[in-house]
Length: 317
Image (cartoon, rainbow, N blue to C red; front, top):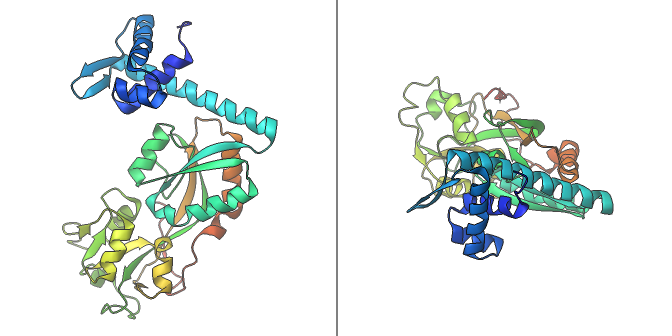
């Protein structure tokens, strides 16, 4: 074990991430034989094979998975140490990777812009993905902080609320239900819904809201891959949609979409700052988390008050 090197750890992680020796070599700017040697030295040190060589690429063995996890922890801690030393030496310098669910991409850039005016020495890289992708990034420690709705339950995290997150049903302005007050959910359930993928935060909230309406679960609607596609489809008259109110600020202002006045809506969830509980926050992470706690709510889109103030609290969703 004492003979292991950082170069070997980096090679091990690169092979695990890319699946092939050649791809790992390209990432590390090394030759394929050099990466192969690093892997063989580690396998000799452990006396165990760390990967199965298959036609589809390098597949970690049980021993390999344990070694890869340890290598990620070592490399991540060294990166944190480097970040901490830079911050101590230069004052407020560092970097962090911010992961956001796709719904948050509508306001995350303005948050980053304001934060970097406050902390010009901290570089923020933005990663956008669906809920499953961002949770996986937290699991693999490839993002430092995530912005999302419900924090994951299968990853040890610390989570802090930084703002309200209203969810609403939208339609084109000429929809027959536009302008009606207090629409019953049973009436709303007869409409054709355009939906995000199963497992997304908004989809889970929609299913919970209509769970008491018979037959809704059997024919929920048409799935589409992004909020933008759904909005365009609603504007084209293909159906209605259940969306975060923070994704439709511009469309509401231009009167291309309207919020339907549905009884029990909007559903109010919260936005969370989420990071791994088993990681020591870097100075850059601490600075960004403090910024969100202090100013985050003020950077959320302002939604016109076109629906009643009464709403369903979905904190338990």
